[in-house]
Length: 432
Image 1 (cartoon, rainbow, N blue to C red):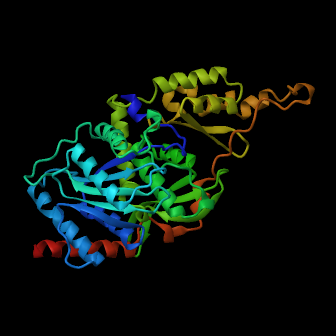
Image 2: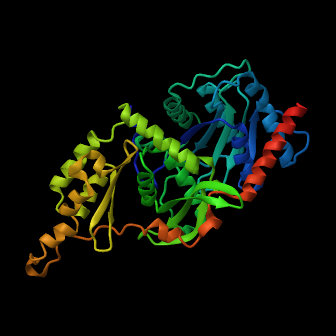
């Protein structure tokens, strides 16, 4: 089973078709997300199945008829909390596929997954280098019965392998490269389009990784050159409690403008993050998730055999674990966080025990260790075996301190727009 959930962070080796399946409670939100891409010229509808066809070709008509197509199914079952199915199906970069073949692939995929009789709409997205399709459907059939989604992700992987053979696509050369972290790639300010880079990473990291504190989440983001700050207060009589994200260079220098979580989506907001943290803590408490175990043994062995922090990081990286040291201005280690990519766990060293605390690592690799050896001069003029740990990103307070309320999580204009859409949805229901 672990084979299906292993992670290999080699950003250039996505050499096969990858499917990312998410569940949601709002069909309106899923359709709006894709429709916004269409309106921006970054997507187009290439196929529909059991959907109402609009009489005119306007985007407003398409949006309205799409929602109407799903409405009877949702009315038939109001008990299911997450009836929406949203699939991102991503062929290899080497596969050159026209819209007709992509439509056939989407039909085959949905049929084999058990959604062949469901209404669904297929969007072709061109907003990133790798062209891909998004499929929006429902997990409720016309009789109001919820479809079986047990082992869905594993079944999806097998279907992708079958489709690669059937349509003569680029096939998977290494099963470990199959992964749901398609969009995970360190933010590169030089590439531009920072908002999209941050958005793609944040959505996947919040959903796919496990962490038990805001600090651990922030450490995870910093590995991908992203910082996050919690902001709260009052503006024009409205209380806000949100998050702000910002990009950084490899050496931790902040660049670009901060981005409100509301510009990314609810999944990136403060409430969603707190729910994920609480859920992870409960799973760890119930022993359904394990912080130590295999990762603890790997870290212990690395501490025994690494002569310096550089070697320590290298040993862990070879075992798919990254470590982030936080240092003060004097160079003393005051924090250490591990990111176990295989098990998608993020944890401070103290969660493993006192022997893995920041003080323990400072004695091993930090200022304490350097001071204890300051009288030992390298022989023959050679450089010391101790190298400086990678500089950690600057404090998020320094990054966001000058932006004050204008960059809070609350956006009055967005709230007005949200209420307007909600009223429009209610009006549509009354007309039906």
